[in-house]
Amino acid sequence: MNERVEENQKKEAVWKRIGNGILNALGGCLIPLIPMLITAAMLKTLASILGPDMLGVVDAQSDLYVLLTFAGDAGFYFFPIVIGYCASKQFGVTPVLGMLLGGIMLHPTMIDMAVSETPFTVFGIPCAVQNYSGTILPIILSVWMMSYIEKIFHKYIPSSLDIVFTPLLTILMMLPLALCMFGPIGNFIGYYMTEVIMTLGNAGGLVTILTVTLLGTILQFVIMCGLHWLLIATVTVVVTTSGSESVMLPIMAASSFAVGGMCLGAFLKLKDKKDRSLAVSYVIAQVVGGVTEPGLYGIGFRYKKPLFAMMLGGFAGSLYAAIAGLTGYNLVPVASFLVVLNYTGGTMMNVVNGVISGVIGFVVAAIATYIIGLGKDSDQTMTEPNVTKEA
Image (tube, rainbow, N blue to C red; front, side):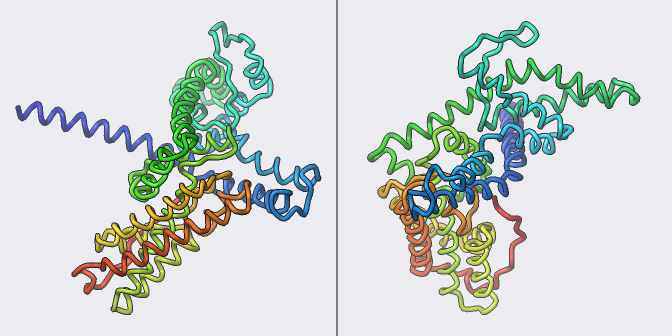
């Protein structure tokens, strides 16, 4: 009996390590994209604000509007090349080879064949030609496989020939693997993950409201488990393919600002000067810096009760977002005031609703924290947690 229990525990440990490894790898490939995503979103935001949908300063056919639009879209369209570089750094592949593989998957000839459904083979192997623009998983899986192949060639090819033949043979080996196997597999997984999000978002009525509200209530715990990178990867594909997303992006403002509200409520409740000062710093860290870990660990998990207040804030703000039909048009995976960029690209009222949902999350969490209290541990002095910046 004990042997069976030990065997089950070992299996669970193995699966846990595999799961953590996948999530960590996904995060390592996506975190470096954040500056590019923010820049692309801000370019599209400028086009939206200046364009006919908002201020009407420039016409939709004007050079400035067209320039800002395609410059912003480029950040999403060329994902296979950019992620090819990031994934190469993550998996220990020569970065330019990752970029080259991304470029191959994004070549106009590939896209034309995918659009026209032209039959194609790679070294005689039938290939399901697909459009990989804006995709994430196909290139990540391909570069992961390439990391093993390149190492093998580095090991067995003499150093005098290594610089020429290792890159060449690696890419030749990866062509059938990427285009006939890992690319289609990644697209298949991404397609069905995307379909789930889009179906829930397009369902409307009570289904969408319940989904958005529930996710907004628990999002911070999802982030702590690292599962948000899987969601971000999926949402990225949804935004790239359909231009908008109505499940995950609408809850980001409410959930993020609920953490800041929790810290403000704690500040109003605390008596020790040092504790109050730390609580204020946690508010600033979230609102300005987009870092929620100080508040989560310094207030939430220290006192426990404020976590419930934070969930109430996320619930209230997300509920408003769902009822108002808040929609995201950009992907800016930050927890600061810049989160409002997610809601630009549609109507001005959509942006206003995004701001309101964040304010509701902040205010409700602050009031709930103050009313619920912090518990007996609030008399002890807080210590500042060791924190890394959250994406």
